[in-house]
Amino acid sequence: MSKQWWKNAVVYQIYPRSFMDSNGDGIGDIPGITSKLDYLAELGVEVIWLSPVYQSPNDDNGYDISDYRAIMDEFGTMDDWERMLEEMHKRGIRLVMDLVVNHSSDEHPWFVEARKSKDNPYRDYYVWRDGKDGREPNNWESFFSGSVWEYNEPTGDYYLHLFSKKQPDLNWENETVRAEVYDLMKFWLDKGVDGFRMDVINMISKVPGLPDGNVRPGFDYASGAQYYMNGPRVHEFLQEMNEQVLSHYDIMTVGETGGVTPEHGILYTSPERKELNMIFQFEHMDVDSGPLGKWDVTPLDLVRLKKILAKWQIELHGRGWNSLYWDNHDQPRVVSRFGDDGKYRVESAKMLATCLHFMQGTPYIYQGEEIGMTNVQFPSIEDYRDIETINMYNERIANGDDLNEIMKGIYAKGRDNARTPMQWDGSDNGGFTDGEPWIAVNPNYREINVNQALEDKNSIFYYYKELIAMRKRLPIMVEGSFELIHEESTSLFAYMRHYEDETLLVLNNFTASEQVAEWPESLKGLEAEKLIGNYADEKKEATDGVIWLRPWETVVYRFKK
Ligand code: NOJ
Image 1 (cartoon, rainbow, N blue to C red):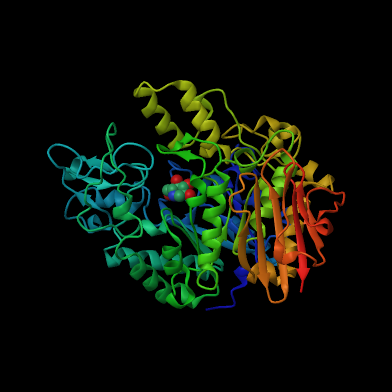
Image 2: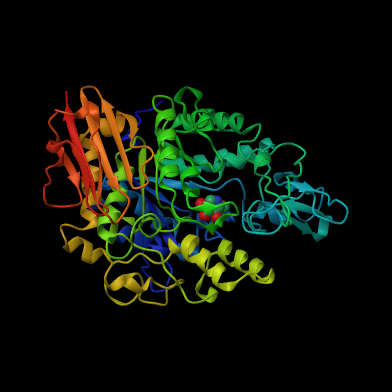
C-alpha cells in the first residue's frame, strides 16, 4: 500500500456539465473548471473527482462513453484537459477521474461492430441472449425503467443493459475486455491522474445463467440485483485489476457499490485484500424511501440513519475505509433533504457538514454543497433533463398515476436537483454561462451564490473550509473510533470519537426546536474545549453537564484525560 494520502484529504466532486461554462454554449466545460481552481484551492480541497469528460452521445450525461481516450467536444480538447491537470497539480490538488466500465455507449466502436453479426470479433465484448417465449431473456428491470434487454435486429437476439438501452453492459467474463479496460486505465494514469472513482463497479460480475428475479404482484419486472450486485467473480476481477494496474501507481480508488453491507465493504476495502481503497455504500440514502423504493418518499427516519452510519463506522474501523457523503450528482441536495432549506438553511447546512465530517472516512463535497445550494421545483417535465426522471415519468403517466404524486417524487428525489448549474454570483444564470444553460438555473441564485458566500465570513463556505483544515490538524478526526450516544433520540445525532487520550463529543440537532439531553456519564467533570459550532455565542452546557441545543445547532467539544 502507498502512503494513504487520501485518509486525511477531502474530495470535491465536479459535475462538469453544470460547473462553469467558458464559451457561452450553455454547457459547463474544462476551461471553465480551470478558471475556478483558485476558488477550490481557497476552500482547501486536495482531491477533485471529476464526473465523466470522455466522448459521449450524452444519453446519460457522459456515463455512456463512446471513446474512453478522447475528451467530449462540448467540454474542450485534450490540450484543455492537460492544462487543467497541470493547474490542479500546481495548486496541490489531485485529480480522480470517473471510470465507467460496467457498460459503454452503444455508439462505442466495439458495440457498433458487436451488433452487426454473431461472428463479429467484438460480439463477445457484450452480453447476448436469445429471447424466451417471444419475450425478453429474463425479467430483470433496468435502473432507468423497463426491461434490461434490447432486441437487436441484425442478430435476432437481445443485449443486456442494466441502465439505458444506449448503455450496453460489457462482458467482464471475456478476458480481452478486461485487458482493454486495464489498458485504458493505464492511458490516463500515465497522463498523471491520481485515481479513479469506479462507476457501479460491483455490478461487473453477473451470476451465470442470469436467472429470473421474483416479480412482486402488480409489477412487470423483477429486480435482478441479487444476480448482478457483488457477483461471483467481482473480487477476482478487482484483484486482477489491482495487480495489473492499480498497484503500480500512487493513487486513490473509490468504488461505487450499491447494495453492499459492511461485510462486503470490508472485502472491497481491506488493505491486505488489494482491491479498492474505499467504496460508496448507499444504505443511508434509503432512509427517506418507502417500500416502493426511491420515488416513494417518506420523512427522514433519523434513528435508522444513525444506526446505519454507526454500523458502517464501527464495522469498518481498523478493517477497511469509509467514504462519507450526503450529496452527489445522483442525489437531491442534502440541505433540502435532511435539513431546512428555508429559515435555517445556513444553520442546518453547517450542522449536516459537521455531522458528516467528524466521522471516520474520506469526506466528499458535491459542487454547491459548500454554499448550501438547494433542491429545485421546475413547473413541468419539459424542464427536466435526466433520463432516469423522464423515463420514470413517462412510464407512470402511461400507467395512469397521479401527476401531483409523480412531481412530488421528482421534487424530492430527482437527480436534476443536483444538476442545476453552479451558482457563482447574482448575475443572469448565476454567472454560470453567457448563453442559454442546458438546464435552468435554480431561481434562488440571487441569494445563494459563491460571491455572496465569499463576502460573508460566517458563510457555509468558510465553515466547510474550517472543517477541511481541521481534518489536517486533528489526527482524532482521521483515526478515532466511533461511539453513538442517545441512539433512540428522534431529534439528536450525537456521537463520540476516541483516540489516545482524547475524546470528541459531536452534537447535532436535526430539528428546528430546542433539545435537551443527558450529558454522557464518562465525560462528567472533564473540561470541555469547544472546537467548532454553528452558533457564535457561547453556552454554558459544557460545564453545566447537560446537552442543550438550539434549532439545528451543531457543536463539537474536545476532552483530554
Ligand atoms: C452511477 C452514476 O453515478 C449515474 O449517474 C449513472 O447514471 C449510472 N451509474 C450509470 O452509469
